[in-house]
Image 1 (tube, one colour):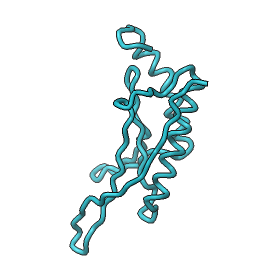
Image 2 (cartoon, helix red, strand yellow):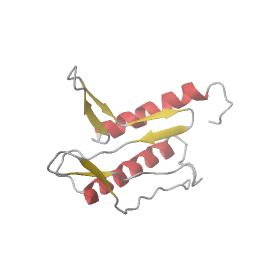
Image 3 (cartoon, helix red, strand yellow):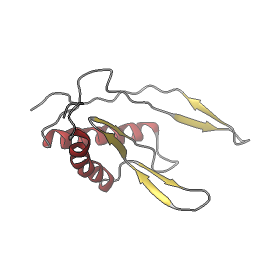
Length: 128
């Protein structure tokens, strides 16, 4: 689906929704609880036209960085496989694929700081 195709947003919604639902059913994504209403929701990602963003956070405070990176890799593998099953593929354009590893540490006063860590994720960008 190329940009400029008037049907692309609708078609991509029909293609991407089952992919995101499959990721959610496998337990990937991020769970949030609203402070005021106490309502909960799960965000796996969002898609528009031919772009997608998927998210993965630690399911518990005890989850290690290595475990979360492994979960993120499994999520990427599933996403890519499902995209390929629909006849699509993940872009091989390096400018279209990126990810961020963010880890926070809190001190005894409850202040946080961002901790820099190195890790790699890979995506299969080939058809077949």
